[in-house]
Length: 163
Length: 264
Ligand SMILES: Cc1cc2nc3c(=O)[nH]c(=O)nc-3n(C[C@H](O)[C@H](O)[C@H](O)COP(=O)(O)OP(=O)(O)OC[C@H]3O[C@@H](n4cnc5c(N)ncnc54)[C@H](O)[C@@H]3O)c2cc1C
Ligand code: FES
Ligand code: FES
Image (cartoon, rainbow over all chains, first blue to last red; front, side, top):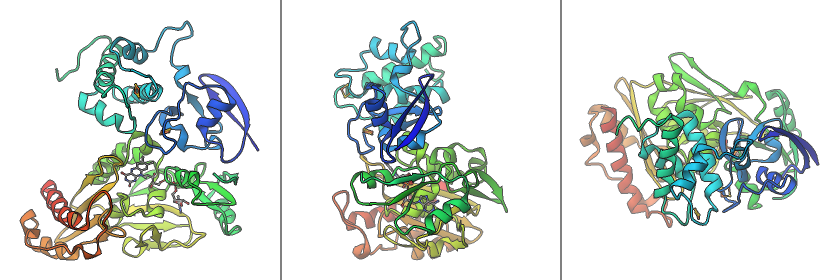
C-alpha cells in the first residue's frame, strides 16, 4: 500500500491505496465522492471525467498514485460554498441538459474544461469537444444548448460573435 | 488488474536502471493504452515504472529547422503548441484529431509510438516527417523503428527520450476516423521536401508504412491526379468489422488524394 495525498476540491485529502487502485475508485470508495460516475470502465464514455491539475481526464484511466500530489476537482467541487451552482450546472438545469443524469457529472466537468480555454466556442466546437462523453438519453441537443448558454453567461451575457 | 509495485523515478537514468533490473517491469506514460490493457489482464507486470515525473522527457523545442518533442509530451500539448503550429502545422493538426480531449490530455508521443497500434496516428507521422527516435541508448531512423503490428525496434529495456521531426516544405494528414473509437480506419500523411515526396499510410496494414508507388508518382507531379491511375493491393491490408481490405485499399487512394489537395 502507498499513501497518496491530493488537494481535492480545495481540501487536503489522503489515503492508502494499492498501485493498481484507479483514481475513480479512490474518489468514490475511499473518499465517498460518488458524484464521479463509472459508466463503461473502458475509457469510452466520459462519465468519470474530473480535472487533475486543471485538465480534464478520465478518472477510470488514471491510477490514484499517478495523481499523487495533484490538485483534483470533481463535480462536488464546482458549486460555491453557499451552494450556488456553477454557471454550467445552472445552465444544464435551465436548458434540460439531462434526463437520467448518469452522464451529467462527466459532461459538466468536460464542458468546464472547454470553457476555461475557449470562452466563446461555436456549436461545432462544443460538439467536437464532447467526443469523449456519451449520453444515452438526451440526444445531446440540450447539452450543447446548455453549454453555449453557460459560455454566454460566463462571458457576461454576450452572444456568440458569429451569430 | 493484477497487483503490481509502483515506482515513480525522477530521472531517465533511474528509470532505465529500474527497467533493466527487472524483466517483468513495464513503463507507463499516459496510461491511455496501458491501463486498459492491465484492466483486461492482458499484462501482469511485477513493477510499473511511471515516467510522469521525469523532466528530461518533457518539452518541445525547435532544432535544426525542425521540431523536437519529448516522449512524455501529451497529444493536447502538441496540438496547441506555438512552435509546432508554426514549424510543422500538419503535425499539430494530426495531434488534434487523436481520440478525444481527455485522451489527448494524458496520452503521450512516446506511449503512442512504443505501442505502434496499426490504427494509431503518430507512427505515420514518424515516416512522413523523416523522424529520428532518440532513446536512452541510441538514435533510430523512423524507417527502421516500426517493425510490425504492435512491434518496434525498441529493446525490452530501452526508453524513448524524444523524437525529432524534420520540417517539410508542405504536409498534411488526412484521416478517415472510425466513427466510434476515432482511431484511423485509414490515414494518409503526405509531405514534400523539395522534389521528394513521402506518403505514409496508417490504419490500413499491420503497421504504418510508406506507399512508394505514390511517392514516385507525386515526386514527378505533385497533384492528386498523379495517383489516380495507381492500384492498391488489398491482399496485405487489414479486414475487420470496421472495414474490409478492399474498402481500405480504396480509402488509401482517396485519403492520399485529399492530403495532396490540402497541401496545395
Ligand atoms: C478512447 C481512446 C481513443 C483513442 N483514439 C486514438 C486515436 O484516434 N489515434 C491514436 O493514435 N491513438 C488513440 N488512442 C491511444 C492514445 O493515443 C494513447 O495515448 C497512446 O496510444 C498511448 O500513449 P500513452 O502515453 O497513453 O501510453 P501508455 O498507455 O502509458 O503506454 C503504452 C505502451 O508504451 C510503452 N511506453 C510508454 N512510454 C514509453 C517510452 N517513453 N519509452 C518506451 N516505451 C514506452 C508502455 O510501456 C506501454 O507498453 C486512443 C485511446 C483511447 C483510450
Ligand atoms: S467510466 Fe471512464 S470513460 Fe467510461
Ligand atoms: S442523461 Fe442519461 S445518459 Fe445522459
